[in-house]
Length: 419
Image 1 (spheres, rainbow, N blue to C red):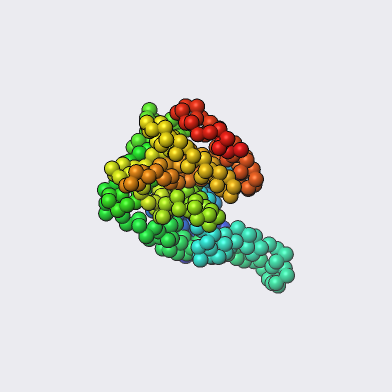
Image 2: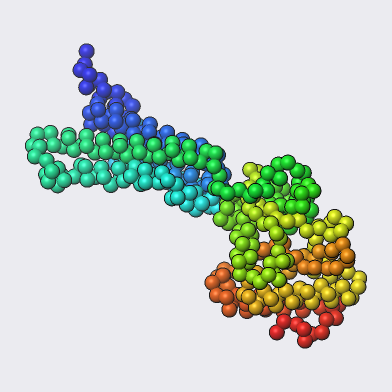
């Protein structure tokens, strides 16, 4: 009967894990198992949180690449021509992680931010240090010659020290993965959800209009509406351009890049910098909400006409109005509001984003219900330079108002045009 050490050594070699002796083989298998379980935790978190999927899958692949490092013996028969047979699968896992991050690029940065802000982050840092940098110091000859006087078996001792250090790192990584999953299992990145979000589940969502990317829904008779990207089943090949499908696909669950989510940010910014006359035209409620199928959306006050119909953009109102006085009234109200936005260098990029509401007495008022979150240019200088923002909005407004005069016969005097 072979000695116990030889049996352990044979078991370690049979499993194909990195081993110089039986104890090292057992440690290698334990490290492989811990990192593999940590990767499984990341996969569970990615399935649970679609809004973090890209970043969590990237971390999962990094863990899998680490697990592959412990399978040198098992991989020799597959990659026999390689000096380090564990490198091909390691590189493959890292490439797969990058592919996941690119495919879900809207959720990669939010996930990494969530990991950074998580209170368990120091455990992750120490785990990575103990599996990467510290083992090299534990095995270095100059370190042992400085702090130890061992003359016999120094190499074997250094090997064990390296393996033990890596094992501690794997334990820390596994511990972090378990704690991170526990922290986030019932928590979405929307840490402070909209106080009105529950209305989405207790009322009928009635479609009231849509564009090429988003659809608006009236939330029962609550006085609120919500906007989301078009449902996934309507974003199918043949019904939508591939470029729009891709754009919706990576933005839908990204809190950072979702258009509806960013509208809430712009709304908050306008409410802090605009005068009261502009704030009165903005919804009283504009909050970020989340739908497990449709992704991030915006819930806001629903403006309706006396007949219950939803308000329409002012270009449509001017087109359908028969009275020239009403056309001129809408035109001048839009012009005056644009001039006020220009004077305050408002982050407002579409001069057609006003809607007309008819009050019970027949009076017409303008409302701002769409907040274009970003300028559609390669170099958005207007995001940083107020004077450039004023210049761009003035030019767009002048062009848009001239179009209204020419197309719909608006007779407002030209001298009232934006200068």
